[in-house]
Image 1: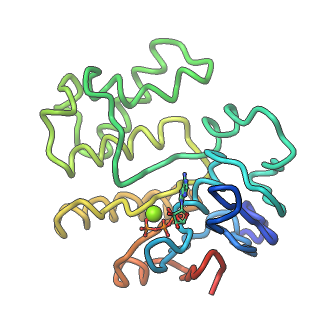
Image 2 (image 1 turned 180 degrees about the vertical axis):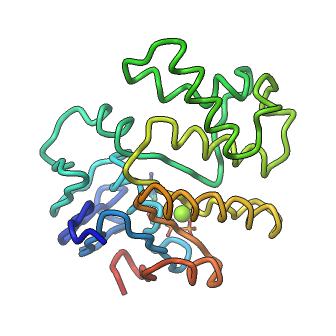
Image 3 (image 1 turned 135 degrees about the vertical axis):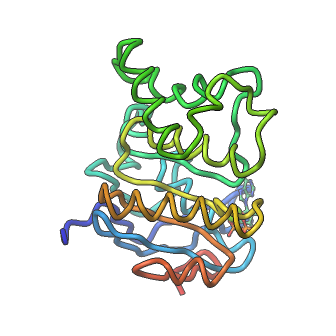
Length: 221
Ligand SMILES: Nc1ncnc2c1ncn2[C@@H]1O[C@H](COP(=O)(O)OP(=O)(O)OP(=O)(O)O)[C@@H](O)[C@H]1O
Ligand SMILES: [Mg+2]
């Protein structure tokens, strides 16, 4: 096991509405490379905001956050960081309805320098690993919720990210389908040493992680 911290956060703060809403109120958190961490906490406590900061979807106001060697507050353009290092799996998977399953998975690859052949092979390899090879030419609207979530996982992994950020990835699924999705994420974490940070409301899901973290009022409890 590696002891290097891939995520380092010190006294991180983020507010909305001109300071009225303190979504993050001094977060201190280190996560090691290859670790599987679950995050629980009440609604509105700042869990999604924290994931958004780690994935550089939004900027913090104050404090320090370094992810995969990049200072996310000091660095200007983070689009390369995002597409190279981070795979996002959210509850609302945001698949594009008029693209096929295969094309949806390939979206993040446009940020990289892949040939058409590489894009095809990589996306198909991942769709195979989530059991959807026979659906590659379908539109997402024709898929079940669990199938859509598997497409979103394939898309999150297509650039071989070092970190997967999952925000209630099973929240909208029935428990059987949810277990399939969790199995895929756990396998990835085990086999490819991907760092997995997962927000969940379910304590049995949180129990699967190597470390459980609780967020309360914008702080680590
Ligand atoms: N873009 C935004 N503009 C204004 N307020 C926001 C914004 N995003 C989040 N907030 C507020 O920040 C606080 C933290 O929200 P966040 O989404 O991080 O909570 P959460 O822990 O993920 O909750 P849930 O479990 O319901 O998903 C909440 O009070 C929320 O209303
Ligand atoms: Mg949330």
